[in-house]
Amino acid sequence: MHGSPQQQAALERLQDMFRVTNQHLETLIRGYDQELKAGLAVKEQRETVPRSSDLKMIPSFVAGYPTGFEKGTYLALEISGVDIYVCQVKLKGEGGKLAINQYQYKIPDNLTAGDDIRILIDYVADCIIDFQRRVGIGQQEVYAMAISLGFAIEQTRLDRGVIVALEHGFDFPNAIGCDIVDLFHQRFETKGLAVKIVAIANDAVCTLLAHAYQHPSTRIGIVHSAGTNCAYYERVANMSNFLAHHPDVSPASDMIINTEWCNFGSRYLPMTEFDHRVDNESNNRGIHYFEKISTGMYLGEIVRQVLVSLVDQQVLSFDIDANGDECLLRTPYHFDTSYMYVCEADNDMENLEDTQVVLEEMCKVGETSLADREIVKKVCEMVGHRAAILLGASIASIVKYMVDSGIGFAITGDVYEDYPSFHPRVCETLKALIADDVAAKISVGIVKHSRIVGAAIVAMMAEKMDQPQDVDML
Image (cartoon, rainbow, N blue to C red; front, side, top):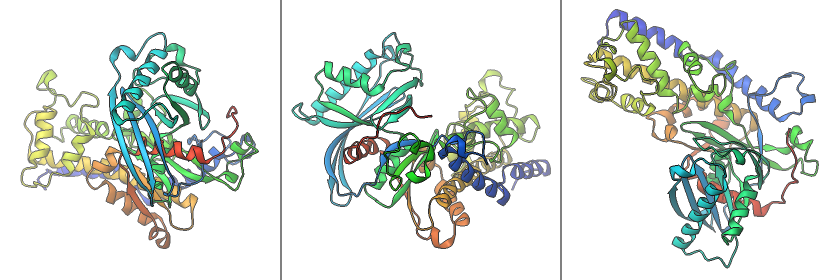
């Protein structure tokens, strides 16, 4: 409203760059269909897509559906960064009723690295012992537990997985190649802990099952926060690569698949010069494209790259180099995605005071004009809107692939829950891309405590299923 012709023209160019067209959406949906099928197929069946799929399509080994009437007490363990969460979930049945006890523990700095990962596992076991004491769990009964870990694990069975990499600052050379469940059980036995790990659980799988226990029609689980992932139910008959190694599994059964859609490729996504810049300057260049243009880890950095470009073009009036090291806008990742929430929600159109606080106090760019603040607000809207559209189109792609009738899906994550207008934008995209009769039957649920509660549901599901045989997956 208060911008000069130069500023108006710059915004129009940006709007063109970040606009998601119908052709973009058609390409994305077609790409998901190809990648889903390629990821499930054995190599001999990939004539149409001879390369490997961008989607990892990892079998979860969780088959069947919760009904909401199962009963029992189950434990769950989550290691997320340096946080440990231990949870007891009492399933009451009665249409999905449950009760939760949960405690959080911090991993000390001196236990994040060393020669022997058993020092970390011992500490985790001590946390579980402390938790059981707090909630009054005795050692007379062995409790089933599922674990959800922030390590890269090659899972070969529901209760079997080999550590292939440690992340988030952990460094134990002797951990690589070890079976994580065996490690835990060895230390549990040493400490006399009456716990049996019956399942390893992925975050998106946990989100799906946490919602499905209370809403049995749920077929898709989505995590959209600092990162993103999607899990859904697939007919085993379509999983030819899995069946090649598991001929004893019924093709008529349904199993949850972890897509790892964070890596969905640039060949299908409408990427700008700013997206490529973020990718080139990242520590994981050339992968995780969908994650880099839609999640909390990167959205603020895309905005920062745009704003720096506008400053260099003198479209914005402030000089971010005038204050020397004090200005933080040239600092990578300083413009946090949460700043976008503030700017988009700033409805004080006369002054945009909240946006002013973000720029002048949080980023220390110096004095800003109202036109500057309007442009920054608009840039946040463009980047955030595109992210929501791409997430909505990705969900629509999975729905189109899966069903001809209604389903429910569950979503968790800070970006989805906290970002203003993100949910309505996603739903608007879904409605535009899916047939009316199908869209009318879709329900969306936002899940709290999804990962840890869902892990306990996985432990319950493990007791309902026959364990698959241990094999090496290709």
